[in-house]
Image 1 (cartoon, rainbow, N blue to C red):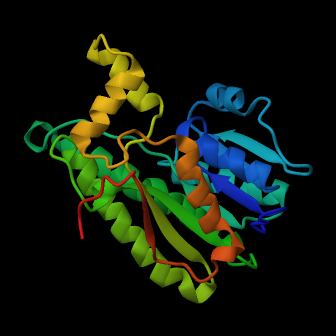
Image 2: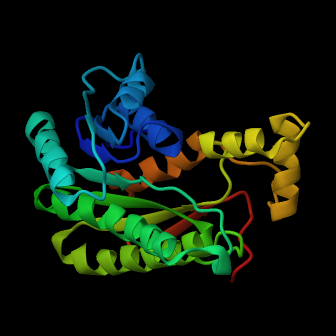
Length: 262
């Protein structure tokens, strides 16, 4: 199926690994131009080195901290100038803080909330002038099922994710008059570098496959395994597609059945 993304330009933040990189790769395969950023320029360049792309698809790479509003505005401006405007935005930059509520410092609470909220708001503000000019503009915020189903061991991250979901829904209503669709993709446990690091740090004698299967069982994941980045990338790309033109303000869970809320 042609998703109608050929020649369109999409900005992807946090694109040097995991879901961000998988999304960028899928967009390039669909013929879209990708402006990708991450904090580490060398890691970003290495991740994109040799990445397959459809004929004509172009890439712009830039080191950028999404918490620096001026840097984000500069990156998005350069992307629009070099790639011919902005049609889509994927807010993916983020992290998780494994800490219980009473063990989380005030600064850690502030840092988590700031990253989740302004890590999305800065790119939206910067891209909006170009999104308004696009014939089919779309924003997808990568969030987590934690936004609706908090975990005690991820207290600040759960709260910050809830704030991000609320913000994304508000933006969907605010930008609808401009024709800009805004949606959330909320992921569960995905096999990325973060979980590989936690496995290594755990000191477990189990290999990653066995360790992660036990983790999936402990977390109540119905499919019995962690997801992979490509399984999250596809719904992100689908929501960016003009074929999803009647979808805005939605939240799609991609978590293998881990969600228990109604």
